[in-house]
Amino acid sequence: MLIPIGTEYRPRQVPFANYALIALNVLVFLATHVFGGRLGEQLVGIFALDGARPNLYQYVTYQFLHGDLWHLLGNMLFLWIFGNAVCDRMGWLGYLLFYLGGGVFAGVAFTWEADNPMVGASGAIAAVTTAFLALFPRVHITMLVWMFFIFTFQLPAMLLITFKLILWDNVLAYMLTQQAGVMSQVAFSAHLGGYAFGFVVAFVLLAARILPRNQFDLVALWDRWRRRQGLKVTGGNPTAVLARPIVMQEIGSRPLEQVPLTPIERLREEVATALGKRDTAAAVTAYLRLLELDERQTLARPQQLEIANYLAQAERYREAAGAYEAFLSAYPGSSDAGPVLLFLGLLYSRYLGETETATERLQHALGVLQSAPQRALAEQELAALGAHRAGN
Image (cartoon, rainbow, N blue to C red; front, side, top):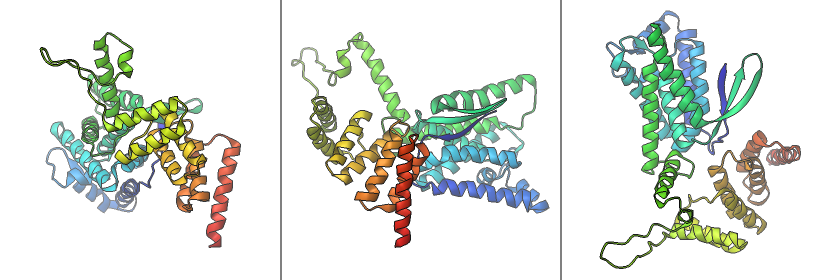
């Protein structure tokens, strides 16, 4: 048995909307299957999605009904794993609308080719899963293997979702059941409809910058791939990678002119140049000017960390905290994430006086730190924060 049990992404805010969806699914199950009796069975019949004669309200209500306990637990596990991160990026209202929209689209895909009833949150959760793929393609998923022995390993989200959940579990499984003439209780069409909705909508929201972007979402990866393909036209000239934008000449017109860098590109270049010369102070100045133009800008991983460390050493704690937060947002799976979370907790606790934020960062740090001394320091600081709150 192969089961996903978690991701390395840590939400920056509590995903209350996802918790509410999970709670509502559980409450509806208790009301219809545990305490509902015959009335519960009747409610399931009324609110399930009737493939032959669907009512409009059923496209929403079927999403909160489940056939049995295992059906519920499986769906809620996937909703917990992928929904928390997607909710964190979309915000609670956008996430709720997206979730319900994914379920409706999955229901439409199901009724297009089926005439039997359907229940379950699988279609909506499929949409959330491929939204996770578009938003966090490089984040790793922790998998639990339960066979003759038990162990865990990690897979990139792109591999797990694309090949295992979509192709293997829904495309190939559907083809095999069709060839064998076996009647399956799995609503493959609803799953695939949800997957398509989630991927397309999340990709479009990113491309239109309606959702916040970073250099690790799928649109950014796609942009970089297109640029690499474009560089092949130069015949593999390595200088093209480091060159400024392509210079063009109109036939019979004026000589070649160099396309100027944008202000953001120029400042990023200044930061890289200054760090290359070991002039960290100049790099910090350029970085702060860069944030004035676009507060979402993040540098390459070692550059971002070096800037944050310099600001902390210079006792510019508020700016250092912002640089560390940007590092965690852009590189949640980095091996430096644990120490950065620990140091952030100490900054908030000892220098910025933000005890709640400090507690949150230190608790996150304990979840990822491997070093015993670092874990001990985090626990010691948490105890001091607890004692301080108790004293007040």
